[in-house]
Length: 294
Image (cartoon, rainbow, N blue to C red; front, side, top):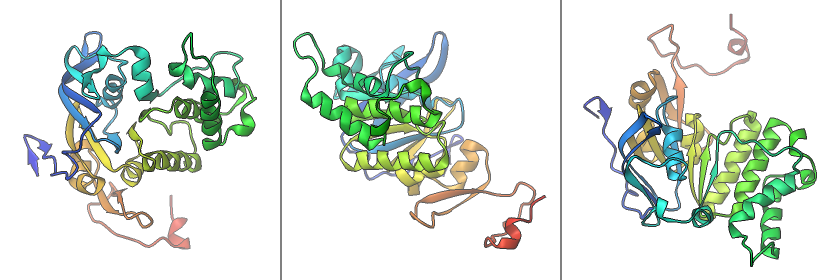
């Protein structure tokens, strides 16, 4: 159903779940350019939330506000019930970690040294490097399959390997909330799914994950809560099977598509229709039609 040109949010059985992160009536933007006005968002506690929507709709802007990188000009972002700006930087860094879209490593730094920087929120003049820090870095390197590369210079690694180093640094930070801005960028399809499986495991262990994702099918397969955005506003939220419909894909993305069950996971899968015809012709892949392309 639609109201005023937008889809009505479906009833979400988890909507009353306590949230560690809440955005209330926030106006967010860059300098004088407003991206979102009076935006309100609840991140369910211990959820794997994916923020989806077309390019430029405000997904990453919302994530940066959640991470305190951007400060709303009005409204507020609450972390554990308190205005996020009221915390000291290290207090925020112990509660949530951010994987940005693009990160630049210092020249000449080695993998293990960069990953160890994730432990900075736990260091001070009295408590320096401890065994718990060493264990956290080792676990992060192992989880991202970087143990054997720990002595390599980050500059020598491939784009996909460097992305895993940044993920490892975030894992070493060991926060209950993890914010991921397009985490599979620069990765080939095999490594994308490997990384998403890693995130699934972290979610299963009780962490709250919030990820900006462009791949709708990955979002539907791995996330248990979706936030759909368009033109700086939330269109709808809910579980993937409630949210991902042909109507929504057409309205939000301008794409005519079928939504069918994923044959492996059973989650919604978006299959674009052939724009050359208005008739749907489902076909079974065969050796002949696989090669029948101009």
